[in-house]
Length: 69
Image (cartoon, rainbow, N blue to C red; front, side, top):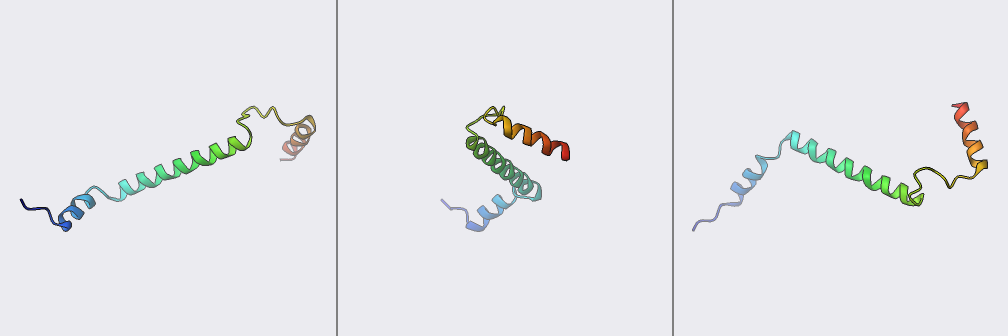
C-alpha cells in the first residue's frame, strides 16, 4: 500500500480553501466573538434585559442625556 505524500494531502486541503472560504470563516469568527461579548455584557447586568434595576434618579438623568443628543 502506498500512502499519499504530504504534498498531495496539502494540495487537496488547499483546493478547498479559497478567498471565499476564508471570508466565511472570518465572518463566523466575528459572529462568535460578538455573541461572547453580548453574553458577557448581559451577565454583568444579571440578564436584566428590561433595565429594571436602574433607579429613578438614573432614569431621569438618562432622559436628560437623551434629550441633549
